[in-house]
Image (cartoon, rainbow, N blue to C red):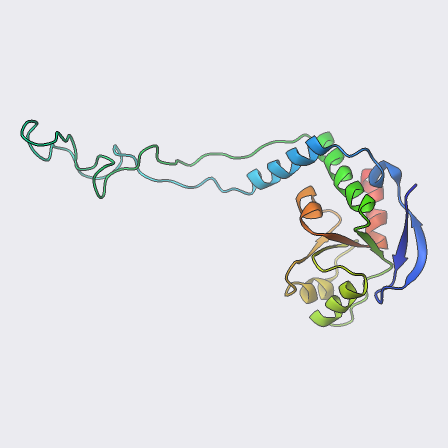
Length: 204
């Protein structure tokens, strides 16, 4: 089993924690990690873009001039005319890509394992924030050497969420909302000891 140091909010080691190899020590499946990221980004797309083709633009029902004597034109709403339709205009479409549950779990475990192997997985004994103060969260992240960080909470912590939201490159998430894209996007994953227990309970 992989063993990591559990730090307090000042960055000092308070104990050692053994991580479950079924989650944090799996063989990394890069293909499924890629599919999970592509799927998430695709599912975030609205797919509502729309432009009119020449058949949808109002007007242009008759020829602008006779056939012979000019460059022949059939409509003033043809694409080469100002105000004409768009060639191969985009239309609303569905971008959703599906990934089955088993594939999602393997991808998430692979992403977590990659962070542990890169020493970018920091465990904090407990997030204690008595007030909403951004500099307190920044001080905690600085003490553990995390700048661009995904902070994962085991349970709801409004003071932490509100304190961290003004920090650029920092995102907070509950264990139930973590995803492959965020784990890979942020350089360091900072989790509470409670969050580790929750992840192991759900994904073991």
